[in-house]
Amino acid sequence: MNHATNHTTFEFLVTTSKGLDGMLLEEIAEICPDVALKSKPGQVLFSGELADAYKVCIWSRLANRVLVKLAEGEVNSADDVYKVTDQANWPTHFGVGDTFMVDFTGTNQSINNTQFGGLRVKDAIVDQFSTFFDERPSVSKVSPNIRVQARMWRSILGVYIDLTGQSLHQRHYRTKTGIAPVKEHLASAMLIRSGWPKNMQSPLIDPMCGSGTIAIEAAMMATNMAPGLKRASWGFDAWKEHDKSSWDKLIAEAEQAIQPHKAIIWANDIEGSIISVAKENAAAAGVADLIKFTQQDACLLPSSDLPSGYIVSNPPYGERLSETTQLIPIFQKWGSWLKQEFKTWHLSLLTSDRDLLRQMKLAAKKEYKLMNGKLECVLVNYELDEKNCQVRENKTVNNDFANRLGKNLVKTNKWLKNQNTNCYRIYDADLPEYNVAVDKYADYLVVQEYAAPKDVPEHRLKSGCKK
Image (cartoon, rainbow, N blue to C red; front, side):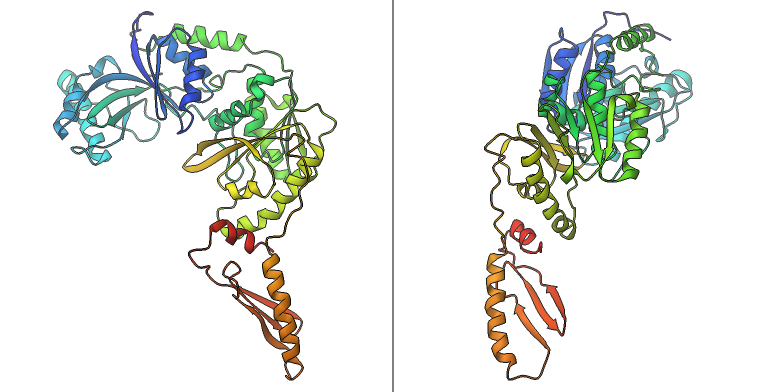
């Protein structure tokens, strides 16, 4: 296997989720202090030696992929995709017996179909092998030895080899997950944004921990455990430029860098089966003995006389209106409990439904837009200071509805004196925000919901039908 000399310079592109590029830039600046970095939405670019890319693979908690550029050029036709790809000398990068696959992202006026773009890249690669060896490597969509990424941006096409293989957010400790799990690199981003990594001597609690990802990532940070250590296979394993001795040296250094654990990390969930999953995952990550696991309702979880610390969590958010309305009273109760039990703590919550967090009656300090997979989310930071912990009266948003019902009942009772019936309508969408019909049948009430008018705001719908 050919090895790149230690001082060969490559161009690298590191990808992450939308909203994390600024944080990734800061992280890579710490991992590789001697390289000049540039960022684009969802990307960080730099020129450096292979060892720099290896360090990012081992140490980055925020990256998804590390790509090394082999060719770049302008594309104004389908033939140009072939020509740009053909600039690279492919047999010097992998063997005819290796399998490969092509991921093509981005389009422009001449290439408006990523599948077609990927096909032209593949043709250029296999044609080179056929010319040199009268043989061609096979394409494999499942576990290929080499992953080629072609990325189109406006008229420029870049062709890369993916050094990571699978996305770096997959740390290989999640044996199972709960419902709507938070991805590992996003859990790290939440922790960084909360401020806890700069105060790791402070306690950290995830009161709705699900499969335990936030607590596990926190334990890995607290012990300086590199997130890439558990991975058995990489995208560069079959790459001919891979420098195994440099890689092995960096892995050994990362293993030596693990430190004793000092922080208090506490993971709690109301579901016993989910806590079992979280414990399994923590054991797979090698941090099970560093996390305190409990099973309790978050709305009753005590602060256990701990010094002020950080609560970082990804609480449930309903995807349907019926689920959301069930969650509203839980968030109201939780907000009251936090004000009572966790005064002076920092609170960071991830949600795709900002209205749910408003039920907690807390003033936000800072908000960050983040993507959890394809779901647009916001991470909201709060300070549970004296002002935020004032218990405000929870004004019932249904006062109008209650008043109208009361008036209707007075009228109906007068009317009933002259009628021989126990089945009648009490309310029929009198107010646009409470678009229901309420009928009484003897001792039973039947409530039917109409579709609300389009001019009624969504948050009024959610709050209006919660009781």
